Image (cartoon, rainbow, N blue to C red):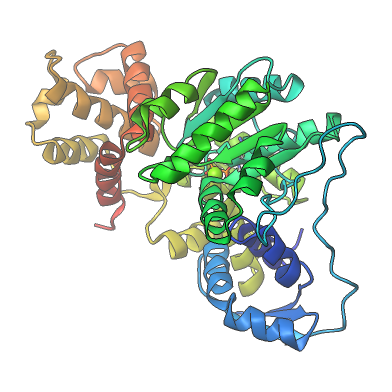
Amino acid sequence: MEFTAAYLWSRVLEAARGRVQEQTYHTWLAGTAAVGLTESELLVEAPSDFHVEWLEDKYGPLLTDLIEQVLGRPLRLKVQCGDPAPPLSVPTVKVAAPGSTPAPTAVGTSMPTPSLNERYSFDRFVVGDNVELATAACHAVAGKPARMYNPLFLYGGVGLGKTHLMHAIGNAIRETMPASRIVYLPTEQFTNDLVTAIQNGTTAEFRRTYRQMDLLLVDDVQFLQGKERTQEEFFHTFNALYDAQKQIVLTSDRPPKELPGLEERLISRFEWGLVADIKQPDYETRIAILRKKAADDDLTLDHDVIDFIARFCTSSVRELEGAVIKLLAFSSLTNQEISVDLARRALQATFGHEPHSARRGTSPERIRELVAKHWHIPEEALSSKRRTKDLTVPRQVAMYLIKDLLDYPLVKIGKLFGGRDHSTVIHSIRKVEETMVGDSSFRRSVEAVRDELMRPV
Ligand code: ADP
Ligand code: MG
């Protein structure tokens, strides 16, 4: 596959779709097409002058931001009027099966549903150890909604596949039970819709809409924190659906118990069904994901290049995807073949540091030294037999970083820390990975050390 204007624009539109109302997307964005790409500009055609004006004025900043996110560097967006497009597609309104309750009506002026993204299917999801339980639970829920785990609560860090899995459940149910009423809802939209309903005096309609659903997918419930009225409303919606034996799926960046500013009664309900976590993918899973993405997008990437990206991008799947897009863009804009060397330059340019596998300055000694400094302990204590918490935590971090950055064999790592066996090393690495997901200040500490290690000497 070639990196074209159309490809770039399709990724930007996909990102935009999660950020604007579905109605807005269909009205203003769905009918556009990218027609040109140079090193400094992306040229997009819209169906009318009115669209051009609207896109430039209202959505220009958002779209320019998204282009930079996708591409890793800024690019000017120019919108011009193209050939009149075929009539814009109207958002589909589901027709309920005969005899069932009527399909929900719009709330105020907006439909409550950003529709499901078809790319987010089970087929496209790579199942590594990190998501095994979560994925199995999602399949179970898709096969027997409201019978197995209700609610299903998925949690994990950013870019690890929560939204993807949630859509995959929706897509699967839509296929096997086409009459189901499904709503996918970022938590912020639930809040916004509620505010609009209160302003317009249409809260009764608002309630009816959500309570008629067969499947309610609510993404990122951590954003309920501190919003009392939304929590109250959500509590009743939850109960109504639960009592009617409708399936509820929720995601969050942390487990229910650790959600701050959330009412106890909500937390306890979130724990009624199954709570499954999603961890960071390990090296092998990262390779499998990259292979799958390449195959899905008809892209030929040598093993060396895949290996390089997998070593370079360790924190999330989103980062992996972004790296591939950046590499494609770099190759196409500079007219060079994709190679490890090009990947190194492309990713270095955007991430601002050298990939660790390519960094000569990093060594186990340096990692130990920096970790000890950061946690304020003498370096020798990392190898001592003492197991007080002030020592075990930095010891585990040092082991984790040596594995992650230098990919040393476990036995060798154990030797570096006073001859510990490999199962202790595995346990330490897992512990760090897990804690990083749930504890953001810990994660920042580890990342600070990692950043310092990456900095050119
Ligand atoms: P989250 O909601 O956890 O922040 P997303 O579901 O938005 O993460 O995932 C980020 C990107 O990574 C999406 O494009 C998604 O398709 C992709 N992705 C995440 N996990 C996987 C996986 N296991 N296999 C394939 N693609 C994945
Ligand atoms: Mg998400």
